[in-house]
Amino acid sequence: MSSRKTLTRCLGASGITILGGLLLAGSLSGNVRPLLAGGIPRDRQQSQERYLEITEITGTVTIETGSLKQQGRPAKVGDRLRASGEGINTNSNSSAKLAVDNGIGTVDVSENTNLQVQSLATLPNGAKTTDLKMNKGRNRVRVRSFRNPQSRFTIQTPTGIAGVRGTDFTVVVLPTSETRVFTASGDVEVAAQNQTQRVTGGYYSVIAPGKAPTPPNLVSRNLRVSLQLLPAPDEGKVRVSGTVNPLNSVVLDGQALDLGTAGEFETIATIAPTRRLTLVVRTPLGEEQVYELVIP
Image (cartoon, rainbow, N blue to C red; front, side, top):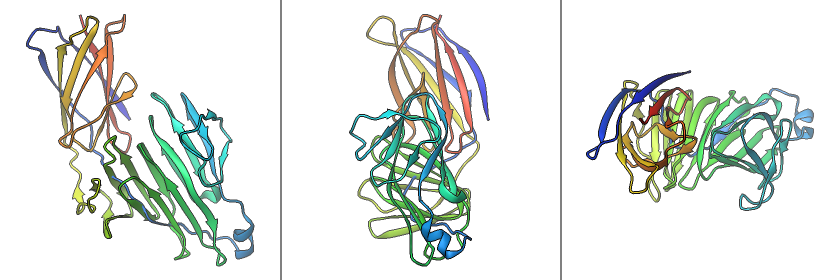
């Protein structure tokens, strides 16, 4: 769900500060560990192929084979990721949805994100293990509850690992490699530096590089965003800066912006012929506020 605001301001030497209404909060951080169960007879579980299937594509999405550094090919609906090292990358203004085989769950892959298979396996007792990896971006995961205690579903990030036992959660990896995990419902265990935190619905945890996960914090849903426009050194450009809740993400004309630990951001943007810029502030669960910045 999104709403749109149009903001028109002249650029002065001192700049103009704009305060706008914001988004319901979501948050994340991510390291995953656990699980998923199947209620299928053991012989069928053992013989069933494991895969992630692309069911939806928006914009530019590529398939990577073996290494995220290799040149990928355009992805299409119906493509399946099976082997370790296979993955997908999404560009700006792009996204994809993956279905985990046998109805285990789905993964919504946001813009400027990668997701890679580490391992997809079925154990002799029928348990299914799904281990994924992401180095940047945001993924929202929904998985059903497991019946087999040895089943697991995990996402590994540069700073930790997150695992679930049937839940709805979001993992975000910032350019700094900091991981944020937000749990919408169910339980998520985040682990790093030999320490584990259990994050329940409505809470989040942060994993900074080299640090243990923070204790769960309640997500605030009463948020605002501040925005400032300043002249840039080069003609035809504008400096855009502001502050949002650090758990949210900010996208300016399709480009995800880096956020500081307090949610601050700053970038130089090219002024389009329409003299409009689109700023999107989004929670980890996809709720968003769209700002149309009109530059006279």
